Length: 533
Image 1 (cartoon, helix red, strand yellow):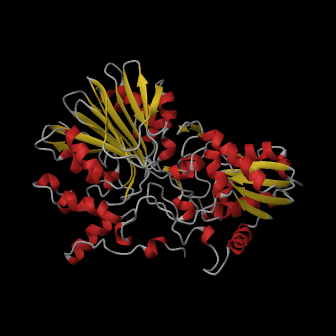
Image 2 (cartoon, helix red, strand yellow):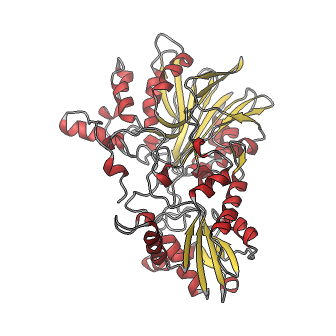
Image 3 (cartoon, helix red, strand yellow):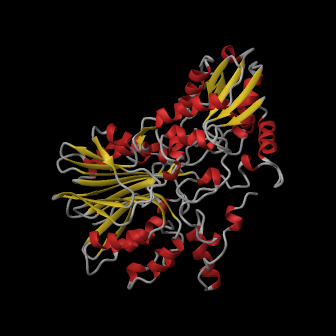
């Protein structure tokens, strides 16, 4: 049997929702996904992949999956929930082989359902393929048409046959295109398919005997190559390599495809590199112990805090972070300003996921289930509260209220990124532009008026964001090699029409086609998708 997966009746996990967020109604930027691949004969590749995914859990908490090959067949196991919920030792012991890929998902294309969990799987003329994807493609409508044009039933989306029982993400489309190679090998077919893709992508995929990896020409999402004593590893972040004891070799280059098999490692460049790494990886997405483009993420965040202190000093008694994402920047702010650093909040480490819905009383208590102010630290003090970003502002408002109730005299908020005003189409799921508090005020408001409106809305005594130039300088990368579209609206890859964008683009396309019998038209302007409300 070439394919094995968890079914609905066997599901032991939950619904894939991570409920230890400070405020489930005010989610921060939702991470992309985490990908991992290992080719290591003689090693327990399933467990190596499990630990690698554990290290990448922060990049996606909706679902997780592992595919393993023993040289004859590929076994795939995936389910909704966290890595620790999806897999147990019995399951991992059943996944035997010399080659594996893994994936932890947050949905950026396709709904959060079991059928969209990855790795995806498809038969091929000479075996099968499993594939995992970190990023988001923006020409999904074109890929959907390319898949529909493939000859034979292998080119059909299963949705037409089993409504609601198949995947509706861009990863499945790429898998279908890769799987169709009747007159050539998978390696040659991949070199044809990869140049067709536009957007952000880091792929790991495999057939029965070979591991593949590729990164988009802009290198928007990170991908790193590592070495084991008896094999090779690729992962979204080098922190995952270190977790399993692999040495870091290098980053996969933008526009590069790696092929790893019994003959070793070989590299192909399928496109000219045009580096545009995501600056938000440095701000929030990546683990603090990751290194991207030779720059320590933790050091970058500390420097952002120092720059914040230089740009927006204030007289205060204590610098404190919003745990945990604001901690490095808060440390930098304290160091540069000379104001003592301290923890003003204590976070409940045991909240985790829960299937018990809080009562109305608990809802009214807001964040107190997960976060409480340390009264003896904040009472009678002027505070600088440092966070990585503001999305809707509800969380900051509740935190500031909590600090004032605990006796804080002043609360000055400092944010280690510029105002987020624009949606991301390259693998981060922000709130919609209308929901972003940085777009508060009317269309005629200038920056000062908008800043004052946000400050008033969250109840702070003062509010300042780091400048875009200061943030970029902290990364030690040239601005020309970074994507900052969520801050300035300058998208490095041209976007298609509005109707061809969005998380549920395939669901909308299929629903429209089913209702009208006419394929969706992508030649539409994207004004409403991108305009500032």
